[in-house]
Length: 434
Image (cartoon, rainbow, N blue to C red; front, side, top):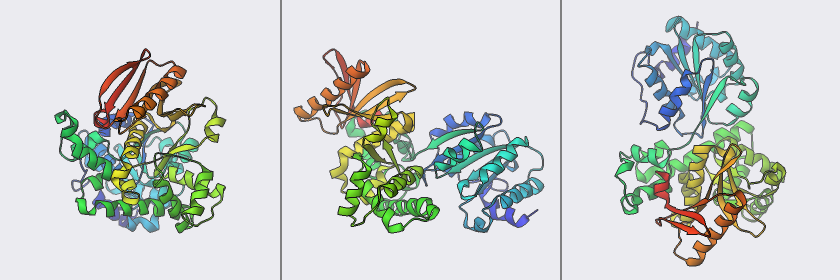
């Protein structure tokens, strides 16, 4: 037994004191049902500072209505005091000590927070689950590798994965102590929508004073790059930071390895090989910093050949590191829509569409094998030619996929129009988000 190890984590646990569980997340109700799956570990994966730790604590708080505080265990593997103990042996030692001093025999809900910092953690979790211990794991991590590589091999069939993002607009309003049902017009919500678009939905940023928000966002961007990518893969810091800044200034745009290679030479004065760029794009996506949407095609080879659209995981990061907010508003609308679709349907069900005539639809949403929605994003529809262009592209895609309805997300224009026997629905972003 190692009582010293237990003392290091005592302050983070519910055993002798109440814990700060933050403000309520809308995801909590949905995720609670997964905690009842017998023989399954719950995995919460998402970008750094999205609120994974607080969500895990909120899950335990719900469980404490039925169990005793001693039946919970939280281990935060980013706690500096645990630095020398980031190995499976110490993990086993800590768990045995908890069982000896705190909870000898009853069921335990064990939170392994940012567990990807512990090499071979997944093998230990599997062994514990196979022993039929009275234990339910809740695992969090800031790397998609936590569930792609580790879980697909060692923990295959033993996990339920839940992706956590920064706050949705609805949850953002609740954090700001507003109720979405009180908003009936663009005028009633425009200031809050602009705040959400400018500073994003990271809980820490939402609750911070305005004068420090951008500094916090810049530091968060740095932490994601340094802690979740550079240190992990032992990369050259300056090179990957330059590429990240170029990407963030090309959000909501088509990108390719060739284009990025050229931009790195022209803007960053740095020569980077296509292989390195490909690797870095993978690392960005793995750390949930960017995600890349492919063209829709039934052929995987075609999806890989065409440029992808780059989106950032939070609009606040974009505005902290790129051009002026007002200059980006249309692209911020598109990025926000992409993120919300990603949140609801998952990245694998999101595509853009383009035909041989150059007509393009921003988003195709797929469920299973079925095309569910076609969505255009256009901030300003005041010009007739702009509106006609968006409709032409939608009609072409609707014809191809045999759909009767398409959607255009706008700043404040709302209507339903019938064009060539097809229905086009125009809806303001704020209303679509709510």
